[in-house]
Structures are given as structure tokens and as C-alpha cells.
Length: 168
Image 1: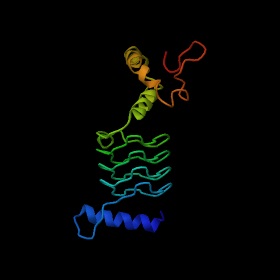
Image 2: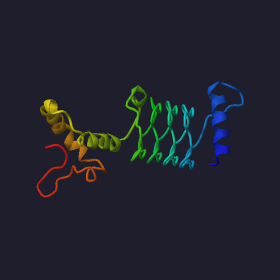
Image 3: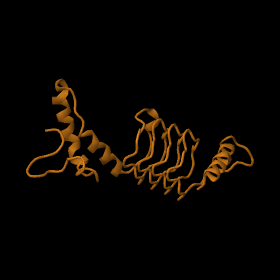
Image 4: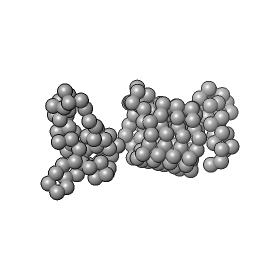
């Protein structure tokens, strides 16, 4: 989509959100928004299912209850984005930056693939020596799920030559 087309869709969506008669809910299903600048865009409840949002700038975007199923968000900037209630099942979030760890980044729907990926990344963290024993207990519980991540090999979590990756 061209920047002008995106602006038109966002303007009509804003009118829809405000209850104006000539407003139209944003339907960007399967839209090519690769690299689009959607910084602070109001996309609440928008349909972005299967949209190509690779490397899009979604800094501070409001994606409250947006449909992002199967969307490609690889390399997208999600810093400060509101994902509350969004549907991210099957979305590709590889290399996405700034995934919100605030309340805005909670209460969304995702697939187990994403859960496994988050757990795999947790297994690569280091903690203070004083907290290591408790952290090791946590790792023992999440590791069986973390190794199911499609990124487990890249993160050094798969067994190689008799050793396990991550914390030992």
C-alpha cells in the first residue's frame, strides 16, 4: 500500500472508532505493509490478519483487540505498542523489537510457538550469583518447553556433544 492509501484507511478507521457515519473499520487483511511507518497509529480492532508488517514501525501504535493472526511482524518495532486483547496466533514475531513488557503487552492471544520462543529466550538470561539457585530451579521447569522453540538451536539450548546449552 502507498502511504496515501494507508493514510486514507487510518482516517476512515478513526472516523469509525469515533462513531461517525462515513467511518469504516480498517480491513488490512493480507495487506503489504512491509516497512510502513505506522508510528502511533490507532489500529484498535483493525483486521491485520495475514498482513505483511515486516520491519514496520509500530512504535506506540494502538493495536488494542486487533486481529494480527498469521501476520508477519518479523523485525517490526513494537516498542510501546498496545497489544492488549490482540490476537497474535500464528504471527511471526521473530526479531521484533521492543515487545512491550508493560500491561499493554499482556492479555493477548498467541500460539504455543510464541510461548516456546519466549521461554527459550528466558533460558539464555543470566542472574546474580545470589539468585542462581532459584533461577536454576525455574530453568529446570521451563527447559522442556523452551527446547520446543524453533529458535532453540540458534539460542544454544539443544544438546550437542553431551552438553546442554544455556545455564548449567
